[in-house]
Image 1 (spheres, rainbow, N blue to C red):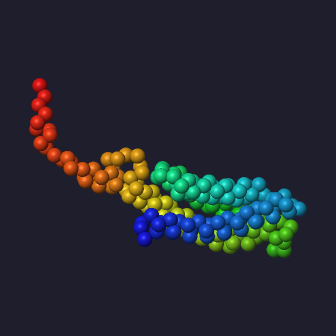
Image 2 (cartoon, one colour):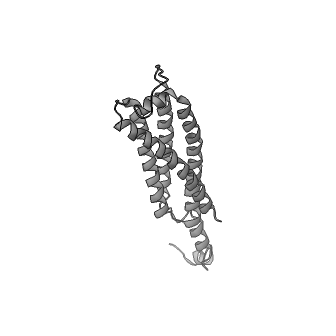
Image 3 (spheres, one colour):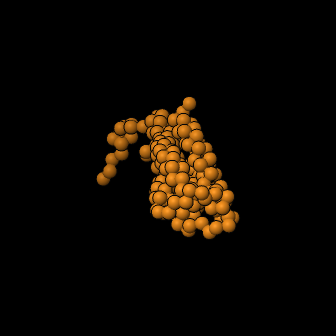
Length: 184
């Protein structure tokens, strides 16, 4: 199995776990929006930002897989780092409330229910942050594998494919032609 396939497999596995957690976050946000009580804006906004950054990072990864541009890996890494930061902000915003009501129902106020069970946010962050770190590692190595093996970075002097092709030519590093050319 080549390095590119290994890193794609690692990233895809992390992406699936991330997708499941984002679906759970989306379920909580949708239930909060259609609930009878008004959800806190700052928590709803940060959870929606986590979901939108996940969509942006996934889209840039799909574009990286479909194209020959390793620069899309940089875009995916930037979105993943932003997703880490917004995840931390979301957990802090869940911890920002001081009130505690033990008998809040999930069906009436899902985000307040989540605020009263803070361990859920901590567990989600404890899963998501290392998962994002593995995704960044896999994306960086996948981009490096694309540059050095495929030669698709646009610069023929740096790629391994172009170097092997150049070395296979019969006149590579031939000094006779340079000595026959006399200038002035």
